[in-house]
Length: 337
Image 1: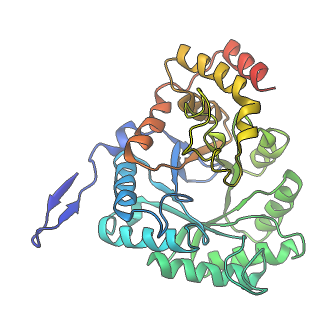
Image 2: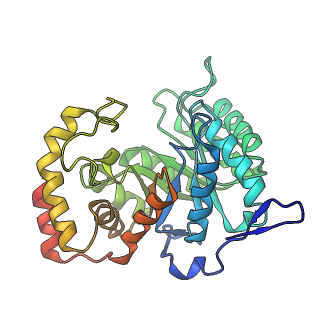
Image 3: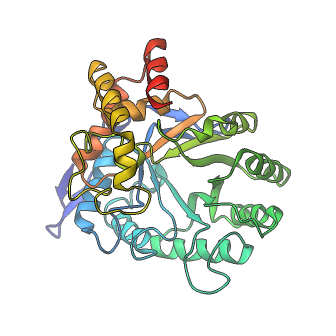
């Protein structure tokens, strides 16, 4: 919703019914409720993208009750540009809604040259978050993640840095991402000893990538933390994009990171069979794929990307049917195994 302010420009006024339609799930044993679907800004929000389109996607998300926006220091391209664009949109449209938003950033992958711009040192994590806060124009983020394990830095140093970030008021909660179950257990133990609110593990999870079921979800459950799933659509394979082949403008055709023609071709029969089941459920394949992840009690939210407001609305329709029969679950297991 928009109204004109005194200068003649349009001021964003959020949909008054935004909290009446969204489903919210508790994050582990914390006090935090997250929208079942959250918006990831990995793609479509960099300097190479149209910021006005990004602005419309963000406003659409909030109007749908999506309160959680996920960023990282190197999202773009170029690095840092997604956070900078988000900060610009935040200042223009969401300055009156900051306390209704749950904003995330992360550090752990390559960000700047030299030995202090990568992995998991105290130097890198604290410096990176300071830069992120400046880019977004924020005093704090709601959650700050270590983006990936660092095999060469003691876990005590990395988790100690997260603890100090909370004590400095730069983050309210902390999380980790891409950690295996054993590493997660060790990190949780350290953070508990430091009395730091560890509430989320961000992990890749889809029908085609179920590694979190091999111990991670149980580990999180035992430690009172939740899971937030990224890449729920397997880089677009679990959508209707590839049902009739590989479009020339698709990610697979361009051989971009994480997806290529061979991967899609090898999974095409599975994709088509899953799509048949989705149609029988009255859903699109993408909607069924999101609903399938949300059936897990440990999953607090599913992260989706969106190149348009309409695409985001289609994903949110997954919430219209979250229930699966035992026969449907067995069939999905049979198809993807």
